[in-house]
Image (cartoon, rainbow, N blue to C red; front, side, top):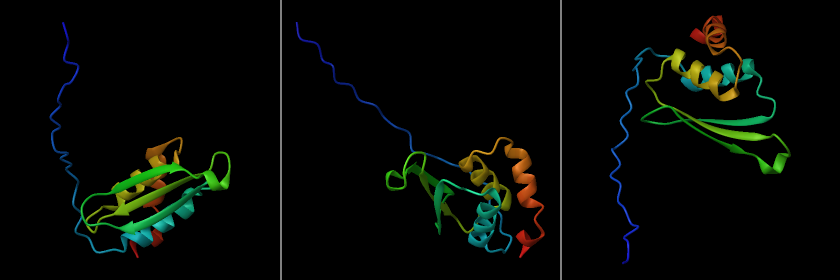
Length: 112
């Protein structure tokens, strides 16, 4: 007797709820300053504007040798400083994310 090994899955659409911060500030510049402070030594990061959600893609950079990585970070116009700082600290792999977020938010230049 033959068995039917096929099966179907219905995937629910991805629904993300993000805090919307309507405060005016340069989100890309804030992210770039945060990355400089986080000192990403073996990671190249591209930061770009996106319209919907904060997006992070990452992978290995085979050109630059062992341990080198890259990341693409898309920042929407409604992202908060906290959300950006948390995502970048998590991306870089800092040991204490809450401390890193507080340090990035305490930067007086971040309000420019």
